[in-house]
Length: 417
Ligand code: AMP
Ligand code: MG
Image (cartoon, rainbow, N blue to C red):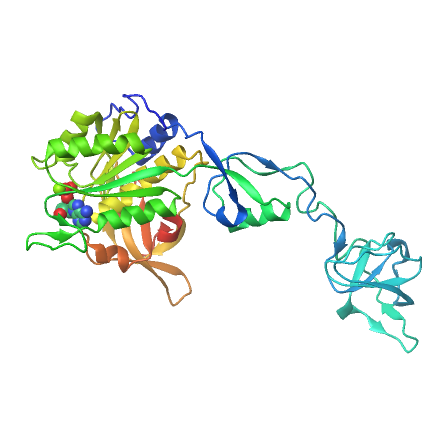
């Protein structure tokens, strides 16, 4: 289990910026050190535990990039086209004999270059004369249409870094090296609780003043996308003692505990009290909207993140606090989503000193530019605002207003989770 000291998340300031939060997490969270070996097929989304240096060059041998005719550079026609007798044929997967000077070899994409040849004419650029010779045009550069061994990756080069979260292209590279399995960090075990007397689990009866739990399913899905092994620990009632003992129990078996709701400073916000009696709590008043307070806690060495109850606030703070925590716990290299400039199709006013995320849909304007349209309502409880939009416009701490037509930074949901 990852163990964290009690003051791990302590923070002195009145309002924490998103960057401060990310920096504290990066500095204080230690990665789990257990690893496991998985097959390539099971490797997508896992975090690589060791560097991989290329055990062979890619491509492993020099080969033709096109279907055509291979010749020696010394024989290349300089001034006018020139006929060449065709001697030999080499296709992908077969080995080539040495080529005779003054001859061309019929060759196909991916076939090894016959010894002595170093240049390939595309079949579209040549013709065959009455004598069956191939007529090659003048002017082709030596080495054209050839993929030299190692041009992609030379043998011995660092090809995949420890901490890389594997995507299909990384798995492809490992396969190209002939590897069959990879050492990866073991999955982070995350426990998820919802809190609140007003929350009912889907599938159970819902009393009139209750609503079905949506956060837990959103958060579990987000954690799963980050490669976590997730325990669904249900709903905690707004009662300090049962809450504290459930959290304490979960701490022993997990690397991370996530709750939603109950972290404001109201009388009925019991997560705060529960964490305080089970372990140690720090409330982060984050300068982020939607967001409000986020609780960070340590229970028997296991980090806890208490997210706000409103679904949109929960979503946004997950992205900024939980995601980097999970990445740090699994030893993954930090990943920062890059905001794409788009044109604001809305006006907006905000306070300086706080980062705000505006839910927007993208559309292609008549002049071809991408334009972000703001969801018409603002509430942090509106699930439709997440469902009916494509992503978030990020407005930095210094910005106080946005005018229609200005350039703003857009983060698609797919880049956030
Ligand atoms: P709280 O932070 O506990 O005051 O909750 C803020 C708002 O979020 C309240 O309206 C809650 O009913 C709502 N909320 C809390 N937890 C959930 C949940 N798991 N699913 C949906 N809404 C929730
Ligand atoms: Mg509550």
